[in-house]
Amino acid sequence: MQIETKRLYLRELTLDDFSELYDVLADPAIMQYYPYTFDKDRVMNWITKNIERYQMFGFGLWAVVLKETGEMIGDCGVTMQTINGNIKPEIGYHINRKFQRQGYAKEAAQKCRDWTFENTPFNMLYSYMKEKNIASSATAIANGMCKVDEFFDDENEKTVVYAITRNDWILLKK
Image (cartoon, rainbow, N blue to C red; front, side, top):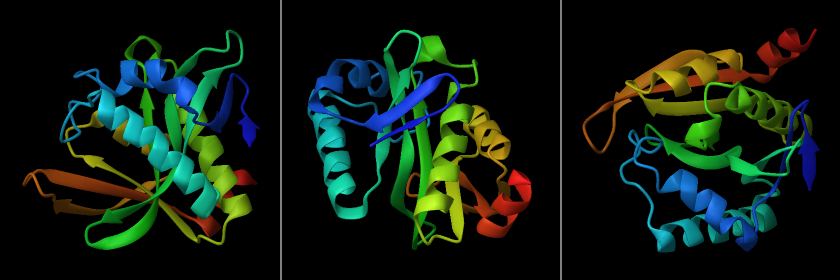
C-alpha cells in the first residue's frame, strides 16, 4: 500500500526503516511530550506492532517518505488509541526534527484523514496530545479538527483532544 501527496509518499513501515525511525523516536526533543524516548527495542517493537496493525486493520502508522529524495523522515497514520477511556481512531505523526516546520506533518496528516474517511466506516477521527504540544495542536487544527475534549492523563498532565467528523470533512472537501 502506498498513498501519495504533492511532496510525500506514505507507505507501510518495514524493518528496513529502523535507522531512520530510530532517529525520530529516540530524539528527546521530538519525544518531549511522550512518556519516554525510544530505545532500539522499543523502535523495533513499534515497527512490528504497525506491521501487525496493517494485517489486522488494514492501517497503522505509515512511513513518511520524501518524493524528491526517497528519504524516510518520520511516520504518520491512524491507530486505535484509548483516549480518555474510550478506544477511538487517532491520527498520529512524528517527523524528524530537521524536517519539521516545513508542513510535512500537516500534508501527511491530511492525506491520512482523507484516506481514512474514503476507506473505513469511521465517522469521526481524533488527534490527541499534551496541552503544551503546540506544534501537534496546530497540525490537528490544520487538519480541520476542532478541540472536543481535555483530560488529565496518567502522568497527571492535561491532554487535549481534537476531532473531525465525516460530515465536516465532506464540507471541507467541497
